[in-house]
Length: 442
Image 1 (cartoon, rainbow, N blue to C red):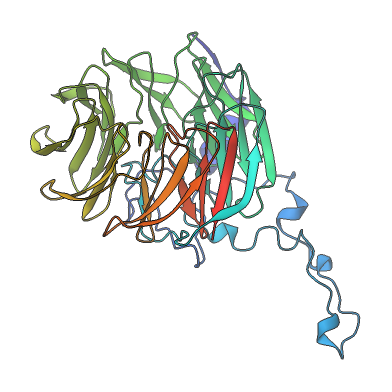
Image 2: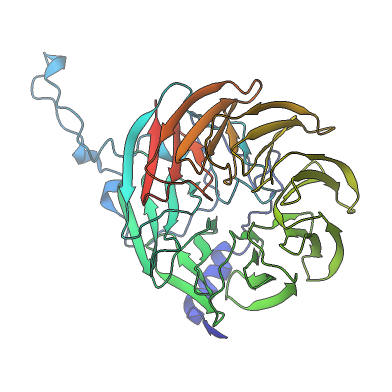
C-alpha cells in the first residue's frame, strides 16, 4: 500500500482550523448543524479557510453593479450582468453533504424544494467520460459530482455552480468515480475504481492526501464523522481512514463485496455485504453482531434506532440496533438499493421496475408505482412531499409521497442505474449513463 500525505504545514493548519467540525449526524434533523430550507439563509456547515485564490465572480465587487444612465427613467437602468446573477441564493440551497443527505442515509430532506410540474433541462454538464454514475452532493452553494463508468478508462471530479452549471474547478483522475463524495471541513472525500481514495481541497480541487490500496477495488460513498472516514469496497472490506492524514486505522472483512455505503450512528457503523449479512461494527473496529438477510444485501438506512435493509432475497427488513428483526416484507423481485426513510414511510425500488411505499411502523404496503419499464436499482430520495428516483429505463420519476400519483417523468438517453438525485432550489440534479449530468426544473 502506498500513501501520499499532505505536507506537515498544511496538516497542522487543518488540525487547528477544521478538526473539530464533522458530519456526525447529531443535528435535530440528521445533520451536524440545522439546515435551513432553500428559501432561507443557510448557516455554512463546513466553510473552508479562505485563500488568496478567491474567484472574483463568486462575490461581485460593488463597482460591478451598472449605474443607471438616466435617473429620471427607471426603465433605463442597465440590466444586471451575468456575473452578478450567476449564484443568486445558491448558498441557501438545502444541504446534501453526503450520500442520501446524512450519515444515516435517510434520503429525505424536509426543507428542500423540488419541482412538481413537468420539467425541462435548466442546464446540463457533459464531461470527458461516457457515464455519470455517481450520486451528487451539495454543500454551501456548490455541487460536487464524479464521472466515469465501466466503459471508461479514466475519471474526473467536478465542482459546479448549481444555478448555472458553470464549472468552478475539475480534477482529472486515473480511474472512474462511481460513488458519491462526502464533503467535510473543506475537503471532498471519495474513491476511484482503481483502489485509490482521495481527499481534495474544496477550494480548488488540489490533492490533500490520497491512499493507494494497490488493487482494482471500487469504493462506496463514505461517511465522515469527526476524524473518521468509514467506507466499504468491492474487496469485501469495510475501512476506517483518518480524515486528516489518510492513515488506515482498521479494516473489517465481510466475505462479500460491499456495494452500498455504510451508515454511522451513535458510535456504530452498519454495512451490508454480498455475503448476505448486515454488519454492526464499533467506531474502533470491533465487530458487535451480524444479521443474515437471506440474500446479497444491497443497502441500509437508519432512523429512530431502526435499520432498514434491502436484499436480493426480495425482502425489505426492519432491524433494531441490537440486531433483532422487527418486521420484514417480501415482493416478487429483489430490492436493489438503499431505501429512503421518512418519519412515516419507507420507499424502495425493485429490479422489475416497481417503486414501493411501506409503513415505517409495521411494513405494510401503502402504494406501488409500476410506470418504470426498467429496474428501479437507484436509491430514491424524498423532498417537498415528493419521491424522486431514476430508473434503468432512462427516466427520472417524481411521485407524490402520500399517494404514489405520478407528478412527472423526464427521459434521459440511457440508464440511470446507481445515481440517486439531489433536490434543492426547485431543481433535481442527477447523472445518467448517457454521460450527462442534468439540472431539471419546472
